[in-house]
Length: 153
Image (tube, rainbow, N blue to C red; front, side, top):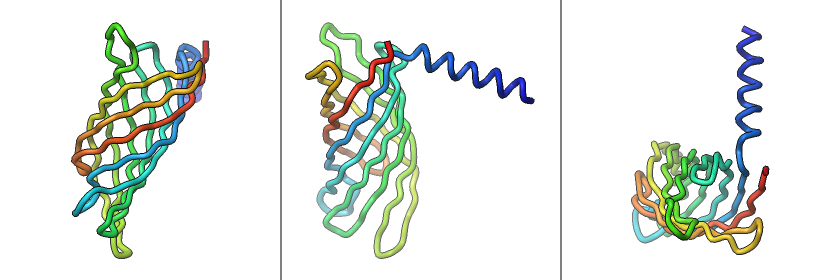
């Protein structure tokens, strides 16, 4: 059993060494996590770049609407950068859970969706990502993330 653990450790370390970078960001969003109108909120994300075209990571978004519903979304994501002449366009699949808080009670739900956006690098390491997303249970969302990219190579 310990040999499996050691082999797994070296596999993970070797895979991390092969990654091209990491990123982290903070953002603002408007979404449909409410019964009436739109909910406003913010979130954070962090991820690893597998190579020039693929990334994966985690994100969390907290939003609150005019009808006193607050939501906490947590999700893992897998991102694909579209191979166009200009770079930065991406499609992202998200899977996770959301907890709705209303009148002192909480209601958990499954979260699944897709996001489409554009990563614009305006400095060597700084970027901004405007995006739109759709899925369940939030129906729609739009916002932006501002972040920092750490290069491993």
